[in-house]
Structures are given as C-alpha cells and as structure tokens.
Image (cartoon, rainbow, N blue to C red):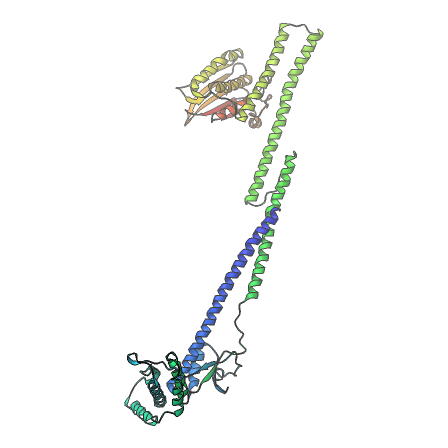
Length: 546
C-alpha cells in the first residue's frame, strides 16, 4: 500500500472513529436529556393531578377550579383541560388564556378526590367495622365542614385523623367556623345506608389478610355518594410534536466530518508526497551521475529543510566529484611530463643517441625522486583526510622545534642567499607529534625559499595567544595575488606566476599545503595565510597550548 493510501486510511479511521464516538456520546447525552424530560413530564403529571385532587378535597367540590388550573398551567407550562368522566369540558387553560381550544392528545389522567382509607389500629387492635363506620361518618362531617369553611372564606388544609383518613382542618379556627362545624354535624347524623352494612358483612368471610382491602373498597363505595366527582385531565395539545432525538442531524454531521477528514488527509498527503516525489526523482538522477540535479525549496517547514539538506548534499557531491576529477587530471599532468622525460632519456640511452654521463644519471634520479615524492604526498594526504594518519603525540616545546627546523634548512637557505632566522622567548608547550609538525614547518620554509629572492629574509617566530601558541613563517618574497589566496590550500594547486621564482617552486608536488592544513587540523589547530604582492607572505599556525 502506498504512503498516500496509508495516510488517507489512517486519517479516515481516526476521523470516523472520533465522529462515531462523538455521535455516540451525543446520542447518549440526548437520550439522558430525553429521559430527564420524560421524567419531568411525569413529575408534572403527578403535580397537576395531586394539586387538583387536593383542591376538590379541601373545598368539597370543583367550584372555582378554573383559577387553580390557570396557576398550574403557568407554573408547569402545560396546556391543561379538565373534563368530567362523561367527557363534558369543565375548564381549559387555552380558553382561560383567551386562545381557541386545541385538540387533546394522549390518554386522560384520572383525578379521584376520594381518599384511600388507611387503618390506624389503636394499641395493636385489628381494624373493624366500627372504625370504618366512624371514618365514613367523619368523612361526611369533613365534607360539610370543608364546604362551610370555604363559603365563610376560611382556609382549609388536610391533616391525618385518628380514623385513618385525611380530614379538612381550618387554617384559622374561629368561633364562627366552630358554629359551622356544629351545624354540619347535626345535619349529618342520619343512619348509615343499609347497602354499606351489607357490603361490609360480605367481606367478613375473607381471610384476615384481605380485611383491609375489603374495608377500603367498602369505604370507597360508601363515600362515593358524598365525595366530589371524578375528573379527567388532558395534558398537552395534538399540534405539539412529540420530542425525538435528532438522529438525522447527527448522522449528517458525522458524514460531513468524515468527508472533510478524508479530503483534508488527501490534500495533506499530496502536500507531503509532492516534495518527497521530487526528492526521490532527484536522488535517482544524482545516483545516475547527474550531480547538477537540485530540488526547489519552498517554505520553512521540515520538508523544506529536507530539500535544503538534499541540495547541500548534492553540492558537496558535485564539489567532491569536481575535486576528484581535477586531482586525477593534475596527478596525471604531474606524472606525465616527468615520465615522458624519463622515457625519452632512457630510449636515447638505449639507442646510443646520448652518452651515459654522470650528470644525465643525476638528472634522471632527481626526476624519479620527484615522482616518488608526489606519490608519497598523495598517500599522506589520503591517509590524513581519511583520519587514519598515525601520530605519536608528546609534550614538546614549539620554540625548540622551530629552532631544530631552522638548523635543518639553514644550509639550503644559505645556498639560496636567504637569511633564515628564528625568534621566540621562553618555552611554548604543546601536545603534538614532533615529526609531523617538522613536516609542516619544513614545507612552509621550502615554499618561502622558493618565493624569496637572494638577499631576502625568512623569519620563524613563536608567540603566545591566550590559550594557544602561534608559529609564524614570514618571508620577504614576491607575495601571492589576492585572488589566489582562497585556492592556496587546494590539492595540486600552485601559484607559479604569483610566487615569482616559478621554476624553483614547481619542483614541489603541489600537495604540501593541503597536507599541512590537515595535519594542523588533526592537532586541533588551524593555519591561515596573509600576503601582499611585492612585500611578502606570512603563514600562521595556531595550536592549543598544553
């Protein structure tokens, strides 16, 4: 599978998974909210039916219930319609609000003001017919009392009584309300209906566990003639849609998110793969030898950094290739002429054209030595650049080393008519390989001798520079042109015209300064050059102090 498809598949998997999880959580939350809404509706139903039942109990009927329905509608936000069992509308909150009555919906809720008898036996005695009779009588009296108190404008509340049913009680019991109570008792002191006694006797054959339900049923039948009528309550309107979960919106949102994620991943993969494809093609062409190949760089992100690194690598490879080709060309050039000379002289000696004189053999020997030196220098440079050139480092004094180099080259300088001097005060200790440093300083001295005319001066100096020591080789030669200075340490490069005494200078291999720079770098130092045409040249070696 390609990288683009893997990216698209991964992002799509993440997007779809996240969307599905979000949709699931949304559905769960919506379901909880819906359940909470349904629960709230059930609470409202219980509140409305309970308040209406209490209203009928405390007032002995349904007169004036419209005000209470209006209050409950405003409190719960529900449309409320109260009807009789036969279907006659008693009150409708829509009509009370001045709006047309809407259609009703759902099954009606039954509001039964009749109390449920709950026996409260005294001293653990079982409930009996006397308790039921007393409760019936008390209930009749309570209804008369509630109607009387309401007519008198006295508040009524329900309170548990000793006979097991809630009884109306005045909020403020005054002498006036007391007289109403006495009058209601006188009016209610008639005999109990024979029907009630017959039903009560019919319950006695049931088991003791069924006595209470039987008494409750008998009590309900007995008080039915006196209790307020049952009512039906409709909540809501037919035009109101039932609440439902927004499944379609959730699915649509999930689909949009998934498609957006897929599109974004596709664009992202194109953005990533386009520069990678360009890098792949360019690296393939570089591998085929087209070192001039480069990739365009746009932006400053990681891909742009990768493109810059590739271009720098290609530049380095191209420079290395060019240096290698130039080195091979230079080595071939350096070896071709002397070998041609050697071959010509040897063929002349073989054919008897030239006599075998000592001078001729000395010349041929010098040419062979030069070729050997070029080969040795090439080997040293290759080892140094590969980091495998061996060093025997020890603690040594640079002043003493420079003095030894002056002594070694004094005869050559005297023969050239050049003064070779050494300067320095006190020991300057470094940790280095003395033989390799002598090789470096000796190479600089020989180059200086090649560039300095008779009567000139070459000065070797050792001075401190903070935590480093400096070795300077200064000559009063012809100097080096400014445009040649950047190439001075290149392999097989020689500034013949700038150095004046070209014939003597070209006797070298052209690798000495490259080897010197590598040796100094392996010792943790550096080497640079300052030169002025017609004035002279100064090479400076900086080495860490021991």
